[in-house]
Length: 536
Image 1 (spheres, rainbow, N blue to C red):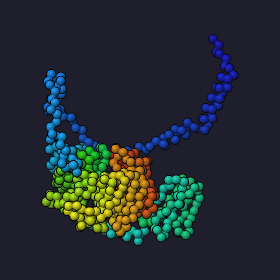
Image 2: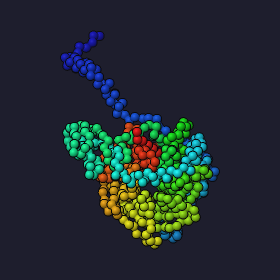
Image 3: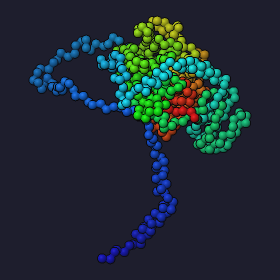
């Protein structure tokens, strides 16, 4: 059977298809599309992770009893209802009740019973014992005295990232900080009057330069390397601190599940990656405080109402305090190793004497829970508290009344205040609120107010953002919902730089700047990951 003859239309159609395929092959469109697709995909790198030992599920000792209603059993319904005492309200309505604690968690926990990873924790104990007796807190005092002179001794400045059409970065000799001049188009400029080097500008792109301002670190030099990324625990990280030690880079973190993890970034052992995971609490970790002058002891607090003291020398998590109410925050006054300050229940502050194991003072400072407690580094008698009641208060511990204490200053927001931290010099206070603002309070009596807009709506799966100070008063770090880190200048009242990396796969929400290594910044996520930026 002879093939059917093509019509003129079909013949031209086949010729057009053939000609288009030859043209696409000559332009290499398919190859470029595959290359673009591969480049747009997020880079995945091998990161360190914890290794939990498998546990067999134990069979229940008691048999399972099926529930049956009175009707199916042929019995008359019970119409008495609840008794009066069962529906009576708790007279202590000002405090939140903590989760029920098992008998095994209400006493001291040994490292062996609390350790949930494979391998051993011997190397961790060795690290703590090696740094326990070194006077690291003396170095903090020297660094703090040097930081007080940061305005008189300008150092390397920050690098500015462009967010709109362009930025002209220059230095004002009178103000001493970077200012940004927004414009459209592109040009190469050099401001002779201000004495700043030339900056090559293209629309949407800026070639950043080191500009001398009052910052002790070049923000543009902060880099995130794959070896400084690890998933150290399951669940959301609620607290994270660096061990205040100049010899060892160690991160101590707590999660929503009640785990405490120690990550030694300088560990050379491949079997454990320097990650040690312990199960010490039953609820979200609310505070981590390193014992002053003895780095082998670390306090941890939790929503379960317990405060524990990790003692590496004794290899135990000792029980310091137990309450039926939740503990939402924990802090310790500088140069006072015998006292703990923690927020308990709805607005209560408890001052606990560690030696006598008794409460020295109890105050009701807020109408809702206290989220953070911080002390002024210049004057430790000045304390700042942030609360869910929408306020942050500054207190003078020397003049607080026993029955009804009055704050020195009330800093108001429209919604809950997640944090309030003093700057390294003690002259400013940074607050973070759920009303999408970061408050900068400065002046002799903190009367000067600057409200900087920032999206703080993190949702239920991510810990709330808390803005922290860097290594001086020049910048504040806070997470961003775009998986970046915003660097905010209090002087300019705006974001001046952004830390971003293709290695970031989640939103960093909690941060801590290393107290002894300038340029080392850690950020934690809701998935148990920790990112550590270092300065080259």
